[in-house]
Each structure stands twice: as structure tokens, then as C-alpha cells.
Image 1 (tube, helix red, strand yellow):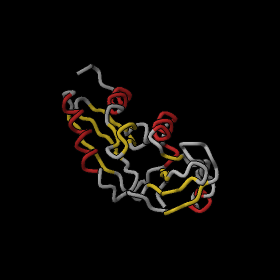
Image 2 (cartoon, one colour; image 1 turned 90 degrees about the vertical axis):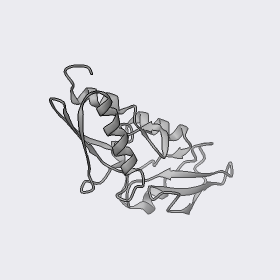
Image 3 (cartoon, one colour; image 1 turned 45 degrees about the vertical axis):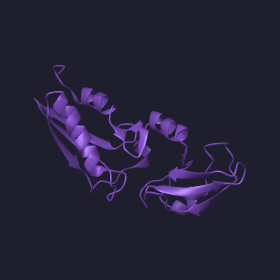
Image 4 (cartoon, one colour; image 1 turned 90 degrees about the horizontal axis):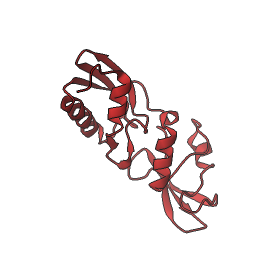
Length: 161
């Protein structure tokens, strides 16, 4: 373990914990880590899931705890369900990793999903000639679109509705 341990160092280590559904994106770059507090060997980490019902919450909590225990620390991971995850917390590296993984990125971050769904570009060919197939994809945090230019289906990573 490096001494002294800071919240910045913990965040750096947490870049090694991937979102289980999108392994190319870390929990840091997905904006899923809230406050990190360090007091000696005790580390408190706030985990902000993209959706309250996300099936990956327990796995993420375990991965974070395991990583910090391997560093000789005493982790306490608090799953925050009272503060919603915000799409604005995704880092630029996170957006780029999502795009490379084939996810569309909202052009506008708005609370009205119909307005957000009106501003989508195909991540494969860049066309704006797309249509919404379903507001819900394989998980609640995604919507499914179809591109009329390249014919591909793709997902839009969306904020909680």
C-alpha cells in the first residue's frame, strides 16, 4: 500500500474497476463514484448506480471492496439510492469509451426523454437519420434505435427517466 492514501489515489485505483455491462468503461468514467473519504486505513466510497434496480450493484460493490482490501485498506462502500446518477458525471474518456463500444451519445442532456430521443446520431456511421425502436433496451439505462442510413440497430445510453 502506498502511504499516505488520498481520495485522489483511491479514485485512480478505481479506474481499474469496470462497469460489468460495459467493460471498456470504468466506474470513475461512468460517473458512478460519489464522495471518497479516507481516514487512516478506513475508506468510504459512495457508489451511485445508473439505476436503482441495476443488477450489477452487488458485483460493483464487491469489486470495489476487494480492490481496496488488496491495498491493505478497510473499505466501506455505500450504495447511494437517494442521489440519482447524472449523465453529466460521465467523463469525456467515458463518453469516448461508450462511443467506441457502439453506444450513441445524447447530443442534449435534457430531462424530457422525448426531446433527448430527438437528438441522436448513429455511433457507427454518424447519420442523424435514426428512429427510436424502444425506449427500453436490455437494461433500463438504454434505449434502442435503428439507423436508416447503415441499417444497424444501436443503443443510446440514457439518464434515469
